[in-house]
Image (cartoon, rainbow, N blue to C red; front, side, top):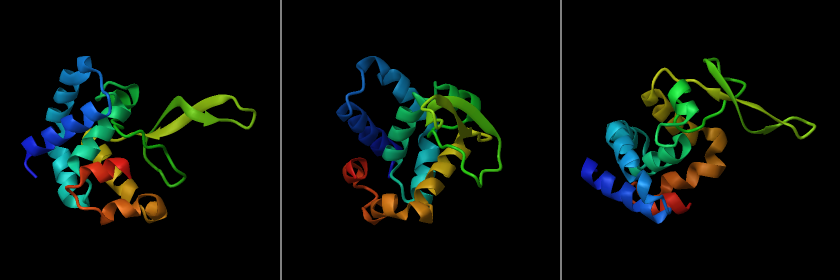
Length: 149
């Protein structure tokens, strides 16, 4: 898929999701910076580049979030017991047994590209087959179903 087609699809997705007009340039800059990585991951892992970029924009506030800036984590991927890499802690959506909000552990990546690759691996994880497996039966160009399903 050509990068101009990916941009058009992503812009359509963003407009359909009700993104504020004032964020358009910020989103376009993010797309320009990361589109090549997203396209490589689409070719390697079968996840539409437009979907990957749209999710990254939402999760990382177009690369402006603390998690993206300080941990190169553009998808909000948390640590799991097997994670042996660096960790970044911040309050998110985890609570202790008394209902108090506590810091969540997020993975730190050496660079944004590593985060994009890890996102692909996360979706392909056999333990998540029930949740995400059906997506990989969709056509890679069917971004609308990818977004909906």
